[in-house]
Length: 107
Image (cartoon, rainbow, N blue to C red; front, side, top):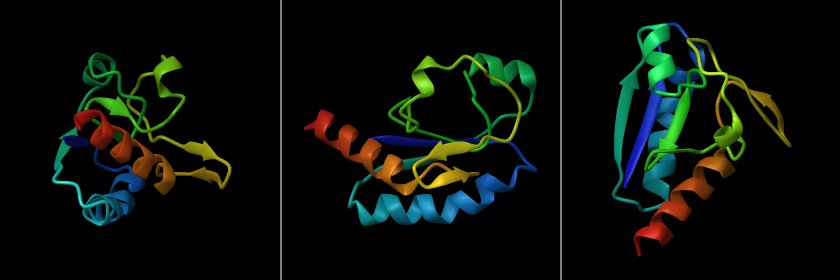
């Protein structure tokens, strides 16, 4: 299983999320690789279908349940809206659910 954290320098959500993401992966007991992927240009953001920084993907799938329907790719800081409100990082339950789905799919 691969977990990707896509980001660009200067967006505070990435720095806030990184230690939490590592802890979540460890707490799920998953032998996942955490791959940090820096996005450097708007063109790269379009190619990578980057919805903003930070973006977390598990086995290539965004942890945001609504991400598959979006096309607003770009070089910007990302905001996440959930029942808990608006945040600069994806909610922990979304990340846990994505990790568990990927683990189940691999079984």
